[in-house]
Structures are given as C-alpha cells and as structure tokens.
Amino acid sequence: MDKNSGGWAVTGMAGIAVTPPGNAGGEQSWRLAPGVSYQNLTIFPVLAAQQPDTSEFATLDEALASGEAIVAEEGDYLRRSRDGRPVPAVYGGAQVNQLVLVNRGKRPLLLLAGEVVSGGKQDRIIGKDRIIPVGAKPLPLDVFCVEHGRWTGASDQFVDAKTMVHPTVREKAAIEQNQSEVWAAVSGDAAPVGRTSESVAVAGAAPAPLSAPVLSRLIDSSAPTRSYRKIYQSPAVSRSVDDFAGEVERRFSRATSGVKGEHVVGVVVAFGGEVVWSDIFASSNLFDIYWPKLLRSYAVEALTRPATNEKASMEDARDFLRPATGHVREESEPGVYVWREQSQGRFDEIQIEALEPMPITLHWLRVERAD
Image (cartoon, rainbow, N blue to C red):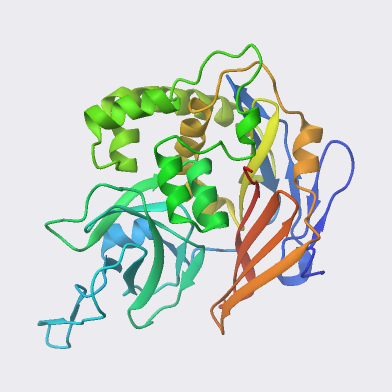
C-alpha cells in the first residue's frame, strides 16, 4: 500500500475499487453505485462488501449526550475529584478558536471537522478531524465560531447540536482553516465549494432558495447573532431543508435497499453537473451514525445553489475520486491517530487514521476547493 497515494486504485468505467489506507491486510474493497438525484443534488453511494468493526469508537454527539464527553470554554471547565466535589481547572480565559474537551468514556472519541457544538459564549464547529483517547487529560480543542454576534452565555459547557455545517462552511474550516471565511460562508457571502466567484451563476437556472440576500434578511429577523444553528433551524428554513432531505432520503433508501452482500459506507456528492465532495467511512455503522446530519448539510448546500437540470455522471464521480498525488502534510499523536492531508491543484483529501486498537482509516474526505 502506498501511503502517499492513499492506497486508491481506480478500475473500469462503471466502478471504483479501493484499498483504504490503514486497512489491515488491504482486503477491503469499495464500489461506487449509480447516483440518486433530486433537483440539483446527486449522491453516489459508496458500497463495501467487507468492513472492520468500528464499535470501539464513540462519536461526538453520542458522547456529549451521554455525558462521556465534556466540551467547555477554556478557564471554566470543572473536573470532579475522586470524592465527587467539583474542582475548578483553570487554563486561561475563554478564546474564540479554542475550547477544552475531556473524554470520560471508555472508548476513543472521533471528531469530524464541521460538527457543531452549541452553548458556551458562542456556538462553534470542530476545526479538524481528530481522535481523543480514553483517559486523556483535558485537551485544548481547535474550533471555529459559527455565531459571530454573541460572547455571553449562562453555561460555559456545550451540548450536542446534531448538526454538521454544509460543505461551503465546512471547507473553510477543514481546508482553509480561516475564521473570517467561516463567518462569510455562514452568512452566504462565500462562493460555494468547488466554484469560483465568477462561475457561481448557472445559465438559465432559477435563483437559489437560500441565496445571500435571503439569508441576510433571515439573519436580521431570526438570527441577529448570526448563529448557524438558528439560521438553518429557523421555521423559514428548516421546513425547506427537512422536505428536501426527506425526499433525498426516500430515494436513497430505495436505491440502496436491494443491495445484496454490500453496505453503504459513504457518498460522493454533486451539485448540478459538478462533483465537489465526498464523505467515506470505515464502516456502515459509522456512516449510519453520521448520515442524518450529513444529508441535511448536503440539502442546505443544494438550497444555497441555483436550481439546474444538469446532472453529474458516474464517470464524473469516478474521476473525482482519483487520488491526489501532490503535497502531503501529516500531524499525529503517537499511538492514537494520524491526520493526513494531500492536495493537488484545487483538490484536497483528508483522512483520519486510528492507530489503536488497530490501524484503520475511520474517515476519508475529498473536496474541490472554491477559489
């Protein structure tokens, strides 16, 4: 397996065979299935016949909901001593781009860039894919603010928002790592992922239901703090998003329900005729956990783009998944994980590989950046 190429092998016009990085023995293969389309969104299922057991990893939403994880503002985290009394642990004052996370559970904790945590002085999103080991001391957590106009709160701890920001916002965090661009994307002032500012308009297409002017009026009336969660869960937006996501889910379920001997482990996503995104996981169990909020994020993205009859093809999706061969950047925590980014031109790939209890790539992201 070639670590630098990500272990990807593309075969044939109708499908893609993949040996995921970190896969023990290199025995797992993935197959790209025909796309499921609704309006300007097409989603191509990624299927696997064999998959590793990922039940030994917890996700952020379930860990926050169960109390196995705590996310708090810096300087305000309360840990408990052995006799149960709260003892303040001071790390310094609260900061926009950093929180404190504690994994109190019995499983390593998987975090994905773009996941929303709600509360504290401002709602934030996770800034980078990461794995938090069991028994780790309180760790600084890199985040981006998605609520520009608030710096107060009754509680300094955060709860699970069960929300993933849509790809244009997520790209600004995961790839660009830029707070100003995150704020611009939340407000609809950034070019959609995969498009230059000169090519956002689609010839002959109807205006986007959630265009920048629409979002601006909505922010003024319903989300004065520019809270991502309040914008996209407001009555004016949530019904459209829910209806859109619900229809895609029905079509996706019908298309994948008859698959024999394989399981859905990820998706490749196109808006109009442009394939720009993919989220692929080590197992169908992980995919199923993330799928509801990922689907809603894709629906939000679709609604921020003009309507069009253009549709991406299987060949477009296959070509999108060709591995990057450019610069590789790695960050790691010994014995816990390796985070790897590979870029080539306008394309970026990010993977998070767990090292224990066995080497396994838990999540793989590929994106065409907006210029």
